[in-house]
Image (cartoon, rainbow, N blue to C red; front, top):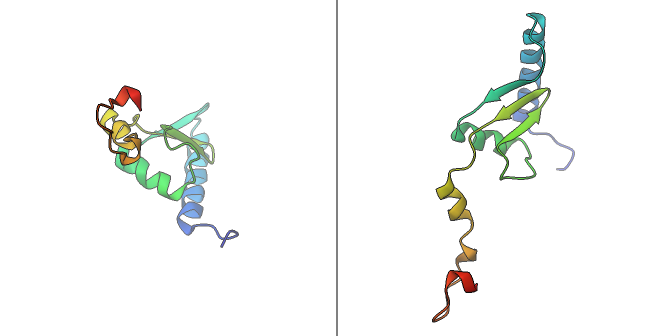
Length: 95
């Protein structure tokens, strides 16, 4: 249902806001970023609706969650020309 929110997202927002509050209480100022590995980023992207899957960061409740850029091998795997088989004498440049 469109009006329902994932409970994991609500938990993430509450935890993020609590974390920000605690950091501000001890005097941290400015932008705050959390660094994730690729597996953590995949899990986060499954909970948060990230419009551009190619991005390597997202802002949530005052925190910037960042992860390494996509592995080049993964990027090539995503762009496989929809599995189309080449015609005889057709090179990738001709597609």
